[in-house]
Picture 1: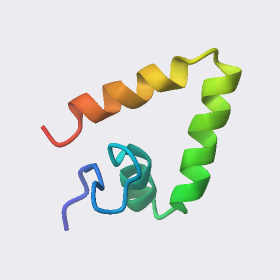
Picture 2 (picture 1 turned 90 degrees about the vertical axis):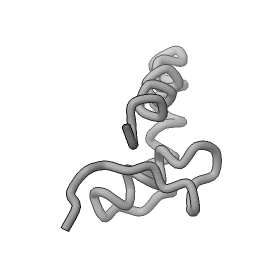
Picture 3 (picture 1 turned 60 degrees about the vertical axis):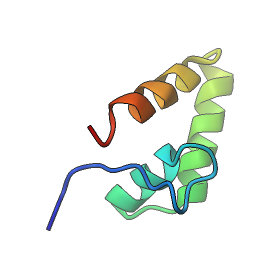
Picture 4 (picture 1 turned 30 degrees about the vertical axis):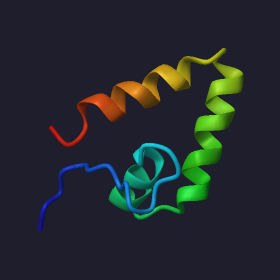
Length: 60
């Protein structure tokens, strides 16, 4: 079984980062998306940067 993280573009809304995280850990994708939204609002947009960094380095 491959335990590496992969983007889930088939089930993703934008780039598949949240869906990939949810699939990797067995979580609900909506909870992961909500956490990114809350993190973006609470962290003055820093979660957006984290999202794009994950999208860039995943699946390489």
